[in-house]
Amino acid sequence: MNALIALLPGDGIGPEVCRAGAAVLAAVGEHFGHAFELREAAIGGAAIDATGGPLPPATEALCRDADAVLLGAVGGPKWSDPDATVRPEQGLLQLRQALGVFANLRPIVPDRRLSAASPLRGELLEGVDICFVRELTGGIYFGAKRRDPDGASDVCSYSVAEIERVVRLACELALTRKRRLVSVDKANVLETSRLWREITDRIVAEEFPAVSLEHMLVDAAAMYLIQQPRRFDVVVTENMFGDILTDEASVITGSLGMLPSASLSNDGPGLYEPIHGSAPDIAGKGIANPYGTILSVALLLRHSLGLEREALAVESAVSGAIDAGLLTPDLVAGHTRAVSTAQAAAGVVALLKGETDIRAIA
Image (tube, rainbow, N blue to C red; front, side, top):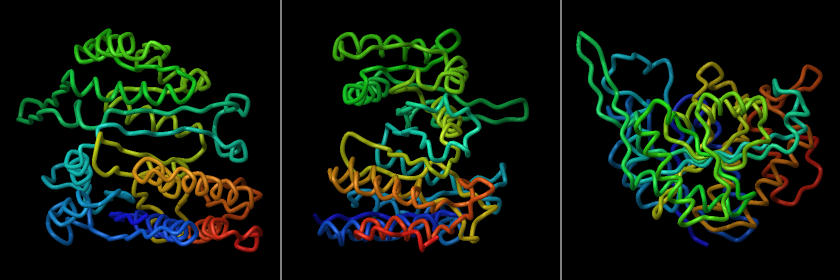
């Protein structure tokens, strides 16, 4: 297979973890006989510094032409002035709109070998396998905004079509898993949530009767994610609720650095990124966890390129690297020596190339 992949390192630790992702893509291409062309472009704060804008036209054009997009992270203290009219995060929001990626998939699957890094008791983690489907292009983040001396407002708005398409995708995903769907809203207060609930009921009843549907208010969902995480299979929710709940759920795994994400459209390239931020406090130190980015590469292979065997190989290699003790500082217990970003990535690459003993890397 020949594929063009846009590589957007961004800010903070973004360039470091993107290098790891690029190395893994190169290893997959070499081992499985694919030709992956990676073209790098600027986004976020780096793009503001270079061009004055967070999403330069050349970056957007590259992403539109690509088969998939791999992104590192955007933002940092240098650009954190809340009164600034141009901010790094605008580049990511603009890119999501430009690509029409309306559904963000975030799998939450704890690794028992990393349970010491999680604040939850081990017995709560057994059997947890959650996939969040977060609506990505509507809601309060994209609604009309107003600010004047007397106050401010952010409009939360959803169309019927926006809700229908993300609920359908969530239902299709549920059919491949345990056929259980939790739809999270705030229907006791918000009109958009009442519309969300009404449409979800209709879609499931008319098109996906095999899916078991449960509605849950967002505050209850926040509680049950910690108390009873096994209760969830597929979770679908609107943009802001999904942003908050997936960051909360990331605690289950012990580290934000372990979690990948895939942002999908009905057609066109997908956007893949780890869910962590730019982590400016550790940028340049070579200690960032690359596994979230590498697992995002696996999602890229699966969802955008249709390469399931290759995706499974990457996921298996990450598991093997963890087995070999290649743990970055966010994952280690006190008795374990941490490895660098580059060492963790090198372990994954070595396993993809068929090497069986990678303990020396640590």
